Length: 422
Ligand SMILES: *Cc1c(COP(=O)(O)O)cnc(C)c1O
Image (cartoon, rainbow, N blue to C red; front, side):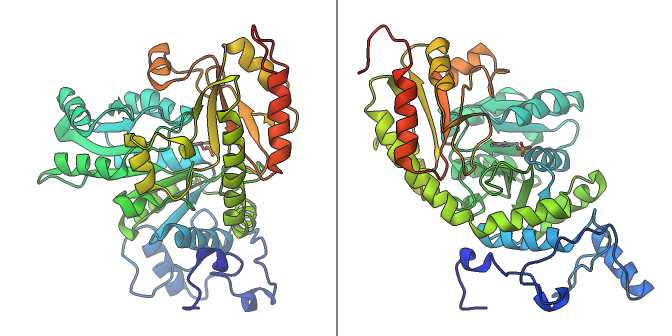
């Protein structure tokens, strides 16, 4: 199918042969734990590859062994995700956190230094600052407003620059859409590499990928996803994914085999269905978000708006956005005039938009970062990155934008203000 060049055209059939499944147009759920080998020799050769004892020959496919290692639903899903990311290989996981923790465990060892961007997802932050600390991996965080020189100095100040092994970033950062320059991070890796081993760069691309940004093109070695969000897109499953070149992915997949944190065939099957509409969903979500952001920008109750479509053209963030992303995305944060009380009144009066954490789904969601997703952050960090008591985060879905705006407008009208808005 050489003439088919766009991933969205492949999502209904790529990597699946109907003739192997009674002609069924869609892959069945391969609800099986194990697979029958034709011969003992065949079983041996599959195991050699699965355990990393030898590399695959050119054009050799790893045969089906056991559903912790591989399964048709898992493999079709991974092959289709590779198309979106233009990656050599992919490993899917039972959650975004298991994708992230597996990468951190594989690419760090006791005594190593990890450089990471702050804020990062709460679960990732906890894993870094509690679990990795326990196994003697030191971590140092930087914020998106810091320059390359400042970050290099920060690494040097640890006295462990020669042990820097991994740079882990999340961009855009949750909840304020702060951007981290992937190419700058690659330069920081190169700066400390010298003659030493490769320093790996991993990017959590949950907010913008795989449709609006592909970090591998900017020099990342690994791209990570909570597939619970846009990739799954219907708030009905938990999953994760990691993509990269064949060499790094062999390492990730071998560790997954032994941690056993792959998703079930049924979860993979649901994700295959989600991928068929990934692009149309995300594009509609981004269109709706623009309408909602325009409405918020002119509303007197909004004192600050964080939206990638409204960046100051003179800012560094604007330049990074132009280079790294092809859309303004479907996430907004804004500060309501007031504090927690006003934010809660707003949230309690939304009807169509649901009050829940998570993001990237077909339905719009709203939450209060200071008391919900980011409650665990120190006050100092909250202040540095703009998580105030009045901050509200919105994830915009596929509803009609007029209904979304009416819902938001009504909720604002219920906020008891010193000054009336209408
Ligand atoms: C949700 C999320 C995660 C964690 O993913 P789970 O699927 O909930 O385990 C990691 N990173 C980001 C940016 C997320 O939004």
